[in-house]
Structure formats: structure tokens, C-alpha cells
Image 1 (cartoon, rainbow, N blue to C red):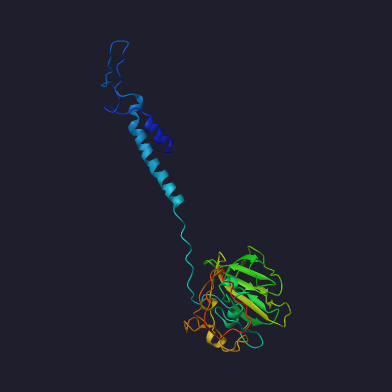
Image 2 (image 1 turned 135 degrees about the vertical axis):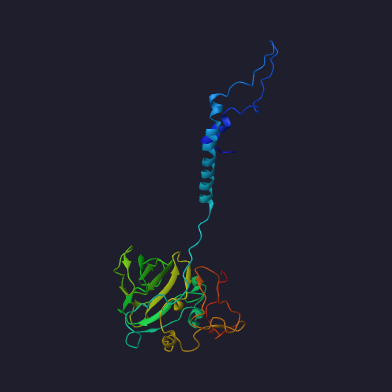
Length: 294
């Protein structure tokens, strides 16, 4: 079925120009009469050029509107990592302030726990852990707008999400208490937004801050190392969470994802990235097996 604009419908209903009209048929019950086609054009016919001048631009406008409605919107181009963000603490690192804890990516700990607490992050640790005493002030790593306070993203007991104008978000997890900033509030880089806590709620078991870099959809997560302006060589010299190799290794693909800055992005709910048939270090007996669903 064709749908015409009102102007186009008017054109199709107007009398055709000379030579295109159908001649009336003869009738059987009377003398045959003929209609002359040499008469002056009717009022409707004389308006035809004006109607055409209206209809064609209108038709082009309607086509343009339809095209605009059906053209898909291009996804936002996310920034490349260039050390454009600050660290989540104002104080310098040290044994009395904070240290780098678990790395982002295919860590040996994440590999052991990939079938349990890291199963929805493709088996990887999808953030950076900073070891810090409970109550250590946490600052925004860049300017942005608070989008969530205690949102549905884990990292208990409390978390905070800040959306940055470049298309990325930062998540601060394992906070000691609910952040005092409000959803919709604008914050500046270096501004205190929360205080760090303990994932085990004890302030003696695992006091640390968990930091993530996500896109605004919260479906894709990235290695924070490239985005944070830090001396990673110095920070990685002391890692309280590592008593052996920092990253798990596939014996079938040796050397893959073995450095702080070459860890892959994570898609929430995606397939396991480290379902290794042969791995080093080997898993201890009794380690939960992969479910096979991903």
C-alpha cells in the first residue's frame, strides 16, 4: 500500500494535462457526441505547476525525515588510554598510606576463583585493588557527575560510580560507608568522594579500594593501568597479594597476558577468557571447575 502526502494526493487527483485524458465513450441510447479537447484549461489544471513546485520539495523533505529516523546512531568513540586520569588517593603511596594490591586482569588469584566470584567477568579480575587502611579518603580520578551511589555492581559493602564526559565511568568499591555525594552532583578531579573500607567488613582482613574503569553501559570494562597517571614500575615492586607469579599462564600460549599493561578488556557475561586446558601455576586439588555455560 502506498502512502502519499496530502500535496502528492492533490496532484494525483487533479485533471491531467491535454492529451492524457481518456475520451468519453459513446452511448447506445442516443446520438454520439464528442467533447472538444481544445478548450481553455480549467482552474485545477492552471494550478498544476504551482502544485508541483510545492509537492516535490515536500516529498524530498519527507524522504529526508524517513532517512534520519532509520539511520542508526554510531556508538561513542571511547578515549584511548593516555594516563589522563589521576590516582584515587591524594596521599602518595607508601607502607603507611596505600600500596598496589591485586592487579587487573588474568591474575593467579582470579584464575583460581574464575568459576565463582569472577565468573561474570570472563574469569578475570576486572579492576585494580589498592591496599589501604579503612577510612582512607578516596578522591575522584577525573571530573564527572555522580551517576550511582550503592548501585547494583557489587564491590560490597558500598560502591560509587562517576560518569566522565569522555564516555567512561569510574567505580569505587568496598567503601567503608555510603558515599555522601549525591546522584547528579558534579565532582572535580582530586575531590574527596568516599572513604575506603574492607570487602570482609572487618577492617583487618582485606582493607582495600577496588577501582574499575567502565563504559557508560557498564557492560565493558578496561584495564585502568593505561588511564591512570602513575609510576607503575615502582608501584608494582610491592604487591602484598602476590606470593608467586602475578598472572596465570597458558602453557599452550605462553607469554600471553603476562604484564601489567597488556591485560584484555572484559565484557560482562562474556565467555571465559582463561579456560586453559593446561595452565601454570596449576590449580590446587579441589578447585571448583568451570560450569561450561560460558
